[in-house]
Image (cartoon, rainbow, N blue to C red; front, side, top):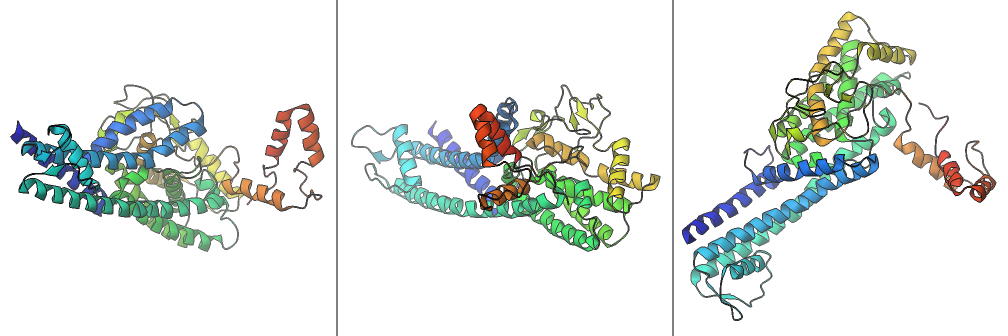
Length: 454
């Protein structure tokens, strides 16, 4: 019995230390199907998404999903610490409970108590060892605990630094491609004279961003669960929008921006595919409307396959509704049907963008999309992050416009009311006297930009 406890304790400690090394220190993809971190995310992500999908309010659902990344990090550290405490306690039990407890007889509970106080370097001193081997193990455990805490303290700044760098470009994309970003809006806002150079610069920045995303999220897959500040933004939607734009440029434009689009597409697709493989997700092919792909036992489920942090069968339709040409129950529809493709080209042509639109260009676009859309759909279902459309049927306000309008109203003189859409104090007073909700409606309508257009 004690020999078995000794083996179990050593195995427990080695498993935690090696898993922490792979997760925190190793600057490359961690391997192994039975890693503690992988099992932890398999056990927690599926119930979390099941609960989140039960919330019908999109904002509440997104908030619950946003809690998972930081909270799972804390829980993972708790699991590591608990496993190390248990491992050393089993070793103490195996060598015969080598402690003197003045209050109680020495037993396994005493071993757990000593292991916990030693690992966290409390040094209470109420229980003392009575053998040289026990003293050596206490020193070893206290050193391990001190080093473990030091590594963990250094892990947080690295993790949040990578998250912050990722979010900077996503925030900058708001004014350049809308929220959520779309390929049509990105190209439309770069349709002025001399915009080709600016578009090439933008694609260069996103090529570098994709490389940084690949490097950081391969080393720290936990970052994939961290969500953006706004509900209509995500790293996956931004990456997909850049891939859509690059595909459109490669298929229908000849020029400097088309060459840079090839480089950006290669790097962005590399990041997307590798991140899908991190979670063992297979690409999901598009299917005709109402035609479920093979292997789908129920609506909205991805092909079953083991993945770190998930069971692929836990995947479902992303929150935020079903966009035209987006994810449909029972399968995946074409994000850009021939009719919508024709509408997209007409929209861009009307904006002054010269695009080649013939059978060859449409076939090139189809081939480019086939290289990445299946992986994007798999990640979308798994992470519950909706993919962007190629273009919005209805114009949407950018995230920055609401803030800009609110600030302009705050800084404006009290007597001036230059904006015809802004409510006057009298209108607010009249509305509040009759219906309290009317004043709130008028105030909210003032935040809508009726005339802004790029």
